[in-house]
Length: 155
Image: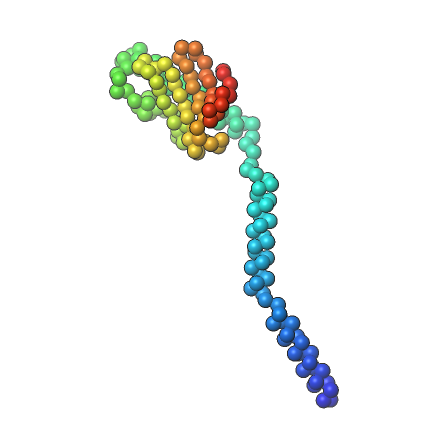
């Protein structure tokens, strides 16, 4: 009977020693760190979601449609009431009724009185980033797209 008590005491002692060696907070911390690293690596590998063809066409057509609408507003204003020198792009945008989503992605500039060029410049909200330009040249009647300084294409 004394041997049984001694065996149980020894068993309990070894159990206590083994549980003391296992540090649960450290284990959880390492587990969380590993999970974060895995998520970061997966995010890097997968990358941002691709835009569908329809979404890409919509974002590419937005500035062109807005520039055509601005041109129409300027032309109508010039023919009906004349075009004062203090007529601003903001007034023309308001008269044109360009959608809020387009205005989030693009800022507009009109050069000349009467206008010679209509320019849309992408903002940081634009999916492909800021600094892209779409230019409508009144003289040639063509659109030119510039992606951050590189010529993209003529229309």
